[in-house]
Image (cartoon, rainbow, N blue to C red; front, top):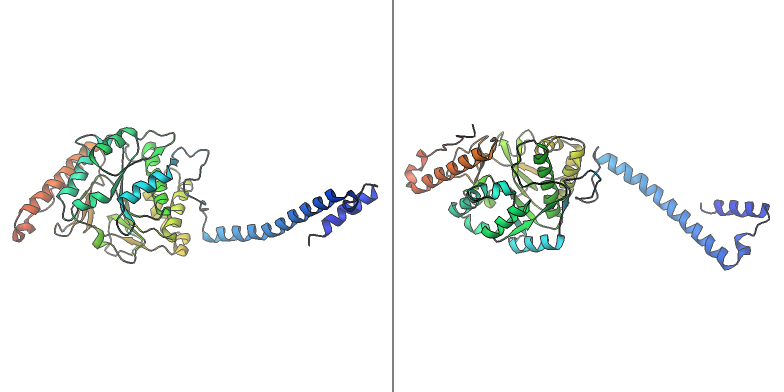
Length: 360
């Protein structure tokens, strides 16, 4: 198939009286070889391109980027990561099965007396949670948060985000909030690519018990809910991205790439709303990632508080706007928990949550 073009060129040269490649000596032979090589590459590449375009079309409308964090001209929320340093921090905090606990923090939530203090105190007062602090990595989004982390915790990682200041309070659905949420998805995807599974927890969550024994054995991506239908496999559950357990495998890596890329198809929406959309996507079905939704009895929140203080693992200050309101109700949760722990076993049933209060 590659022969006709060189023959055509040779005939045209002969007709004008110019020398043919054979008549040009060693240089002509080299030129002929280069032309043949280029034509061969074109013949191989064209079918591959057709196959690739067909596969991309079959996987869904959103093209999955080759790698999370691939730069775009308008991608001001792009995360810049020192890969070697990140891997060192993750390795230092990882459990035996390469699982880490991750939370993100900015300056507003890191000040003394703010959300971070309540968060860390919950680990110290919970059942079988103190030792989990050895596996917690606090990912700071600005210099002030990183400095505070280094004062109060062992495993800290500074995340640099180009063109965005994440230090102040980010109210729900503001531009700064959306950029912060999508930067988080980008970062978590890169953690998976490095081979680490993770429990991600918002800092406005208090931990009462070790959640690891309560995760599903067959779940790749397990996420808490604002509302739980009672069926962990029901896609109509309302997920909350503030708490998730994700195993690192090829399915979850591709799932996070797809999730992050889907922000372009859904401008102005945060990661949770986009997740609600893509969980039904044919790409996710074909990918085979096993999604599980966590019961609010074990992983509750102000949207739907746990009804069982004898089993609850975490409580989230969700469905609450305003930093001072969150801090108030998080402290109330800790007081309720301490009261529950102090009572004799037979009297523990008499304790219930006094929240929501300020977050109503």
